[in-house]
Length: 405
Image (cartoon, rainbow, N blue to C red; front, side):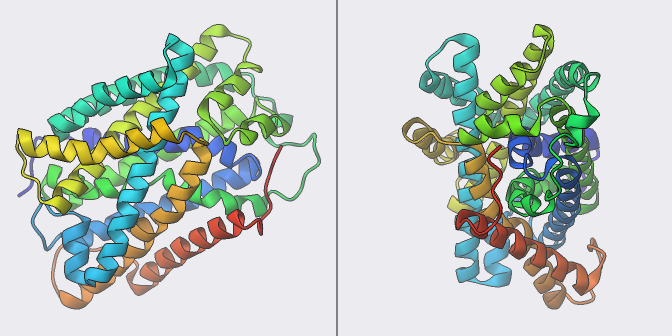
C-alpha cells in the first residue's frame, strides 16, 4: 500500500547521498586522465544505465513483500548459486565503501581536529551509525539536512572555484594532449560506484509502499548526483592543472591528498574551508546512506528481527568488519572505490537485468510497473556491466593506459 506522507524529496536525497560521497571524492582523481569532456561523458552514460538498472530491481521486487531485499528475490528467481555470488558482491561493495568512508573520515578529522586518525574513525562510526540503527526515517531526516548542508558549503566553495576557472586548464589546451578517451575506460568502475545506490532500492520501495514513487525518487537522486558531479569536475578541472594530479594519484587518490592539492591553488582560506566542510559532509552522507542499504540487506539475509536487539545484531555485522579493516589496513581511496566498482557490476547491472528478464518470464502478462526498452534494454545494461568489469581487470593488469600526472 502506498504511503502518502513520504516525500519524493526525502527519498531523492537518500539516493543522492548514497551516491555523492564516492563520486565527489573519487571522480576527480579517477578522471584526471580522461579530463573534462570524456569524464563528463562517461559519468552521464553511467548515470543513465544505473538509473535503468535500479528500475529493473523495482520491477523484479514488485511481486514480493515490501521488506524483501536481494537475497530473497535473487534466490527465488535465479537460484542459490547465482544468489550466493550476488550476496558476496553486495556485501563486498557495501563493506569496501564503508571501509573507504571510515578511513577517509579519520584522515580528514585528523587534520581538522588534531585527533589520531584511528580514534577519529572509531568516533565517526559510533556516532553516525546510530542514525542507521534507529530507523530509515532518521536516515531520511539527517540525509535532507546533510544534502542541504552540502549544497550550501558546495555552492560557497565551488562558487569560489568556479569564478576562477581557467578555460585553458579546464580543456587542457596547454599540454596539447589528444589521447583522453582511452583513460575513460579505466574510469568507468569509479563512475559506476558513483551511482551505486542499488542496495537502497528495496529500502526505497518499502519506504513508499509501491514502485512508481520509488522510481521517481531514484531518478531524482541520480539527477541530483549527476548535476553535482558536473559542477564539481568543472570547478576542480578548471583550477587544478592535469599535471598537478600526479602527487594525488601517487597516494592512491586519498581525499586528504586531493584537498591538499586543491589548497595549493585556492587563494581564499574561506573557500578552502568550505571545500573541506563539503568533503566531510559528502563522506558522512554516503556513509549513512550506504550503511542503511547494507543494514537492510544483512537484516534480510540473517533474518534478524526489527527489534532493538535484532537491530543491534545487524549493526554489528554491518559496521564492525569495515571499521576493523580500516584500522588495520588503510590504503588508497580511489583504489578501494575501483575494486568496489568492478564487483558492483554484478549486482548493479548484471543481476538487475537478469532479474527483470526472469520476472517477465515467470509473470508474463502481469500488469504493474515495468521498465521500458524490452529485451534490448536488458542486453545493453548487461553489456555495460561486463565491459566495466573487463576494463577494471585490464587496468589492473596494466593493459590500459594509466595516467600518472
